[in-house]
Image 1 (cartoon, one colour):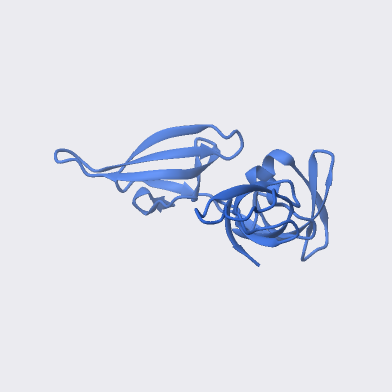
Image 2 (cartoon, rainbow, N blue to C red):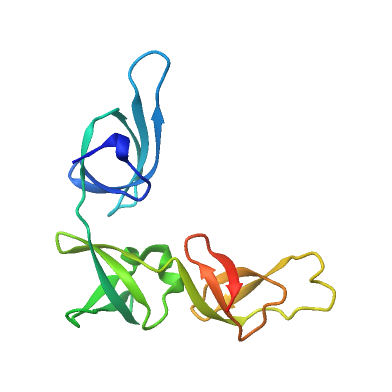
Length: 185
């Protein structure tokens, strides 16, 4: 059990016979009356987002998640095949469990698979990945003065905005959480 005063973004809770991620929270102390915590929760299985208000100090059940390091091997239809690095067991994970990070998955990449009661609930990919630029328009002389950006397609199919000096074949580092270019490797 955890107090709602200790909530953090990304924390997973067991509420109403389901798993919920804390998307955002706000401690409110009105001038008159008792304090409370207003939260936005996202259902892990369905993706539904609800707003829920708790009294300050109220206890909620924290979900016990097992993080297992696995290696992404290949895509099989709509499933992604991962190998457990400890037991070498291969499992198939449906595309909807991988989430938005699917556009950054590269073969042999190490990821964290989140499990609850031996059931897969999600896949966390690294915060930063290094990928090759396969298609981007060439830089023209003089267009770098303003410091603008251009679209670049990466080897996994993801499209990010990059500075004009980035060319085809360059390896770049991308923040997977914000879909932003960080630097050239």
